[in-house]
Length: 300
Image (tube, rainbow, N blue to C red; front, side, top):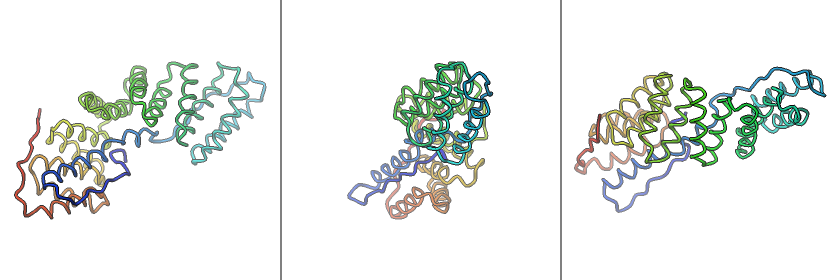
């Protein structure tokens, strides 16, 4: 799921004080839980090929063009990206001079998706550039190019593309969600991330990832009760969302609710969420140490 990152760190046992170690664990969780998630989630959530109409004004029969596009789409849907790229490239070679042909746009768009999913972000960006040149009103091309820029660690360019996609299609919740992820990578833009996640939720309140990342943004603002609230909403939508339990546990812990935090860490650990397990182990070892004063944070 989106509110996660496969790379988990290992905390070291050393001579640090209990409060210092707890802070390390909290930073570890928020880093693995929040940062890098923009990259992990920037890939399309589900494949939707760009289907153009079949033009007959070409040197090669429309049946051949249609067959090559459809074959490319089948390869793309089944994860055979190199074969899909080959089919789309054949179409683009045939139609390269027909810049007003919708099949050429389709070939470039779908080949951009294939390059993206294959991990070749530079070539994906090149193909989405071509689509945007031919159809500058295509919000999907800006969205997918933004995803490629995000995975290419070009956050500013990703933000520009997501913003243009939003201008073209202001009612698409996923655009605000992904722009929120890009904003969240910059500590100075957390307020903007909160605004985008809230807008995405207003358009689609049923996505647990958006609630989860809004929880992370609130956590970074030290608004722990608000963070716990939105981690809880993510759990309400998806009761098997282990990372959301860990997030809510972190928020509870920072707000001084140790028992609630332990309960959430326990649920997360049962679901295989390793940060939850590590926090349970740490808190058990620290149980004989007088608890530090809880940080309540700033609440609205």
